[in-house]
Image (cartoon, rainbow, N blue to C red; front, side, top):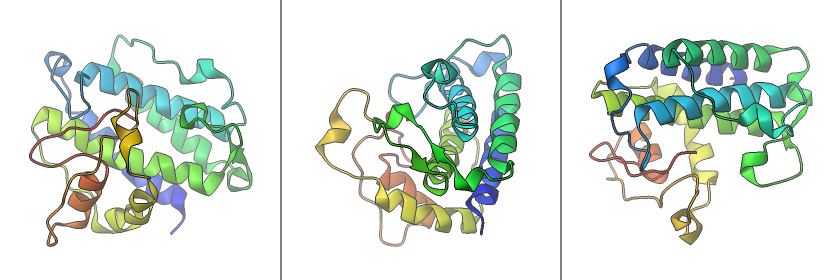
Length: 199
């Protein structure tokens, strides 16, 4: 399946979870260490806008990645999600290179790989929001299966202990764990207690 369609579905699932957020929820802690739900939504919104800009050839502009406060974080998130989905759907986007400054690599990434990063990020961030709210989040099994090879490609090791690391070190997952739970564990999260750093 086209990575853009997988991403669209993961983003839409995250929009549906974020729609459950109420103003009184914004100070709730999240599985992303040290981040409130307000912090997480600001990050997620900024990343959508940054990836949209990258799809349009403007990813090197650090300003497009900047996190900004929003009077209505839920509305801002939904608007940013719509924008990135439209940017990824643009004709010819899969032939472009995406500049992603936060990855720490100067060379552009092939579009399929860049959208794959975005896909797994929002599949998991949907869980982060749901976990903060205490509500269920169960991605479609085919999304989890498609995300699994991407999760396996994320390097593990001591670098994940460094300040600013995208993910906490991986944690063990039971052999019989569902695929999505295996992804969470691989990226430093567990259903019992979140421990990841924000990406």
